[in-house]
Image 1 (cartoon, rainbow, N blue to C red):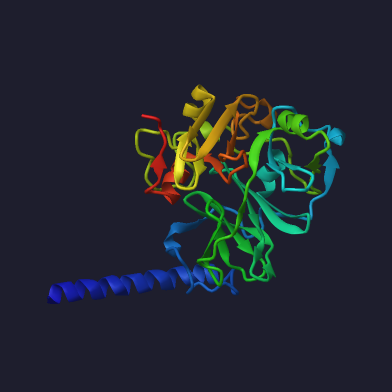
Image 2 (cartoon, rainbow, N blue to C red):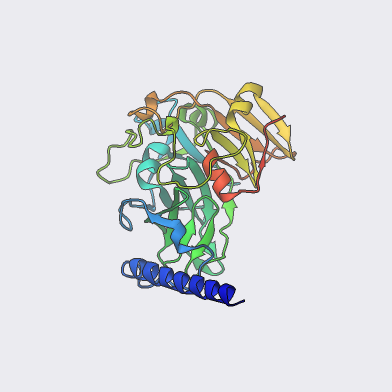
Amino acid sequence: MKPLIFALGLAATLLAASLAAQSPRWAGDWPNTDFDNRTVDLSEIRSGGVPRDGIPSVENPAFLHAAQETRLEGAEPVVTLALPGETPRAYPIRYLTWHEIVNDTVGGRPVAVTFCPLCNSALAFDRRVGDRVLEFGVSGNLRNSDLVMYDRQTESWWQQATGEGIVGEMAGVDLAEIPIWMESWDSFRSAYPEGLVMDQPDARRPYGRNPYVGYDSAARPFLYAGEDPPHGIDPLARVVRVGDRAWPLERLARAGEITEAGVTISWASGKVSALDTARISEGRDVGQIRVRDGQGRDVVHDVMFAFAFHAFWPEGAWMRGD
């Protein structure tokens, strides 16, 4: 037993040394974050190359009536948020690409609309946790190439792809997700001619330009060291995630509409990729989808890259139709 005891002791010593080396690295920039409270190994988190708030989130965005918007091209992607009883809002990806998080309030409901370009993940969350209203920023860190957000109230870290608190006081807390979908600007203004669209933020950014030219055609994701998806699926292929199931977008494009596992997913052409050409409006057509339940209600979902689905849902189901 002595070799086993020695090995366990050595492993514990190495782990302690590893954590001791990691914590000061983070603690200098995050003195108010409780690194002892976490749901993930700190070694999984790495710098994305920018400091905290180096990618500035947007607070209290301004909006225009859809008819007033003149900068967007028809096939450009926007994120649509249509809360019951409220005027639908469009959040252009040309702005989310450079800001990644928009802290907004819609009908008195605090929401965060988020987009991680490296995972093509667009999700919206309710910013309330108990009696607290949180405001989110970009930490500058990544996990599985996905945006790690933080809240300014507790400086806890949150995983954008899952909405889960992973480090700090809020570790283990799940944000409530809100159904949104990504569609073309033409599709939004046709469906909601009286809708609102987020105005251009007051920041010096080349809006309409894509800083990730050719990313969704690359061989490997950026800063990702995990496994490739199974079944020979390309890591940067788009999939529609509903819960722990993923439908390849390629299958949906062929079928047009699929009803499975309690949802109906429809596909239509007309929306370009924001991660293809230098000008977002000139990207290739990757189509747009809606996900509804049996009563026709919109369902929380994400259109993300296959590698990210596999990284965060390693036991998830691949809905390949075979």
